[in-house]
Length: 134
Image (cartoon, rainbow, N blue to C red; front, top):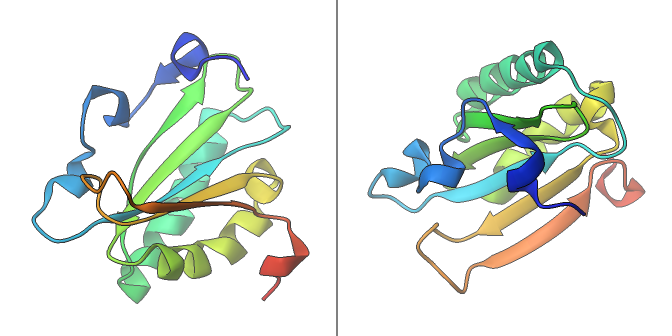
């Protein structure tokens, strides 16, 4: 995989500039980061996915969407989410991610622990893996 810094255009995320805004609060913030795989993504598609995730997260109070990064050529996009429970965020996000062609074949990274926890457990999950059918 090519280095993300060479092919990503920073859109709304501050991830490459330091600790994300949502993770700067005092309480523990776990993470859910979605990466598109094998599709060309447009900025409009990413905004639509973020809108759907934002509405669902607000309705169920599981976290917040904190921005995205998109490759200039659309070959990859990342969507960042933070909250107190990565597993709960994944459960809410999964049906939404499966509905959008841009993320249906994507990958989810769940970080179980605060951004400052260097020993936080990290799991990678494929969104279309039958194990996650709910």
